Length: 355
Image (cartoon, rainbow, N blue to C red; front, side):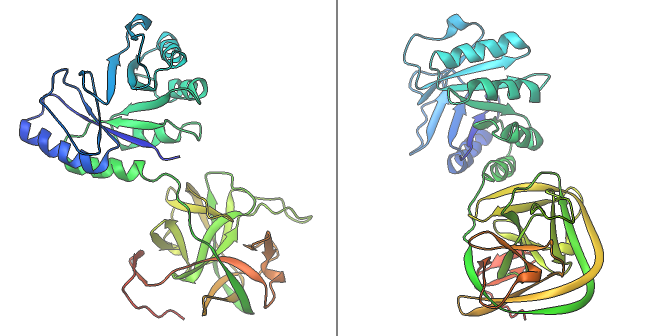
């Protein structure tokens, strides 16, 4: 589900700054929130306006007591609730039961616990829009209880702040297009430095990291979730192979495994191409025997160098297969793209040969 970005225009800004922010918000925000009760006439084509004024697309009210909620209509109403304790949570829940479409929450002291409570209580009722003051609060609001708030309200003072908050909100899960590649051959190699990426999360079966020797051809390497009689599963880990390999860290950016550090973000991908961002707990580099696997997709070869061990598995259309059992003719899941990369960023027009 895409998260909503509400940009609130602060009342006491200089007129020129306010005009510039409204122009920037009209390009980036889902809703522009005007605090003035009697703003100057403002119309932005195709943009939803919210505020306490009569002709607002979404009418806002400051909910201090339940009697403040108008009897009707409530489907275009947003109740602003300042949360300082349990009584305020109760007011928000009551407004949701009455059919108020949006609940805008401002948590004064405790931020996480009230939001967790209201996410659980208001789920499938009103939309929960959280007021945030900075980027970190925005991330917290959007990720709490995995579901997160339905959106955020942010009060920028510069265009640059709008750009930064958009980057956080628009990072809602995206889908990666995966293709089937046919195994051409495998070649055992000598000892090399390989990297295990230990994340701060628990990964699922048929979920892992996209890794490859060429940025244009990445293999989906499964997390260590496959049960076997010799080693306990480590569902936080992907044994990602050679430290020189590329891995996808966002929809449009790769890094070398050797560049990754504790606290960095990587993009986890499942067999359907669904993605999520997780943080790295540690990168564990050790020297192990390696194997090179070559596959063909869309008429061209691509390869990946992984540790030569039974626990390392590649995702296939039907499940997964150990690198020790990979044979020519088998199908595996890959991400294939054209173009080259400049410092990890895709440049589609650039011709790059990696072999």
